[in-house]
Amino acid sequence: MSRGLAAITDRNFRWFFLARAITMVTGSMSSIALAFAVLEIDNDPLSLSLVLTAFTVANVVFLLFGGVVADRLPRALVIQVCYVLDILSIGTIAVLLFTGTASIPAVAALAAVNGASTAFVMPAMQGIIPQLTSPENLQQANAMLSFVRSAVTIGGPVIAGILVTTVGPAWAMLVQMAGWLLAIPILALVRLPPPVGDGGFSLFADLREGWTEFWSRSWLVAVVLAFMIMNAIHVGAWGVVGPYIANNDERLGIAGWGWVVSAEGVGVLLMTLVLMWFPLRRPLRFGMLGMSLFAIPLTMLGVHPAVVLVAIAAFLAGAGAEVFSTGWNVAMMENIPLDKLSRVSSYDMLGSFVVMPIGTLVYGWLITHADPTTVLITSGILYAAIALATVAVPSVWRMGRGEAATVRG
Image 1: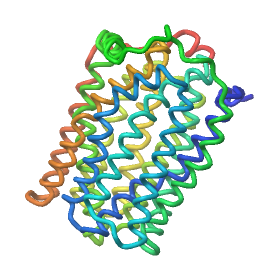
Image 2: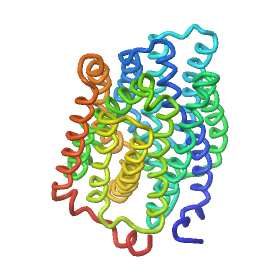
Image 3: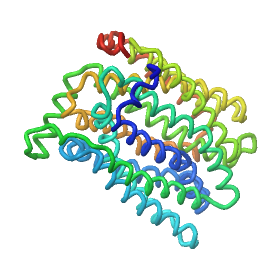
């Protein structure tokens, strides 16, 4: 078996990979479907920012509890239960759209349910991967998952754009529901040992233990603090301003925005192929340098939102983001104890996401009260400055890999 695909030899990883691939294929159009579903109801960027804020607030509120649950209960079961909740919430939005009874408050409430469910899925996903494969195959396993994610991101947004402009966003949501329905029984085939721990359960004690593990690592704290601001910029400038410009600027358009998002996926895809065979010996150093590239499409979106130019910039940003994504996951999985990994991941996610609701609200307001070009250029400069400053943190700059991972992986 080629080294790049070595993780697939593990039975549990094969079943998990199949289930995850299905949900990534069907869910790749979800963000575009939701964004334009909201704009179909009310073509107002503030309405879109309110729905995204509802999702993010619910996600942030439940993240820490999700980390505790994922460390204490079988992680595959946690994911399955959450998929059921996702089917119910997204399915209800689709029904409301089909019947013409959808409203911004109703969609926001259902998006909040989906956000709460995601708060349990994400720590469980992060914690389950080291249980599925050997340590030397961790980078390959993460790169393989990223490969599928990026591959479907290339076509998913384009298909979503076509569906939205022809039959409406509700159909894309039905496709996503089908993916969850298929993934639930496949995850039942994953056989893992019971969760590591003393069998006791104390929410506050477990949270305190996870916080101690998180706070004791300067590289972890530094990167999370950086992403606290970077994600707020991303979700506001890219997630709110981007679709609004696409919906109102002929140079981009809804279908063009789908191509832009797909181009980002191409960049991720090609980089995953590289990372499946070549180990990242300095995962955080090169990861944060890669993240700084997102300033390019962000600035281009403000300067000249033409499809080709923004798509090329998004391609570069996607490649850089994948360097960080794989490097960060491997750094977490190699340096955090398995029985605390989901809790530490939940603190990572909480810190990274906590300002995102403010970002969506601020950018929803800014785009109606300030010049979009100025907003986006300023955002790009700030984003790059934060990413590059983080590289200067000694523990981020020096972070390496274990000997087994770099020699055998």
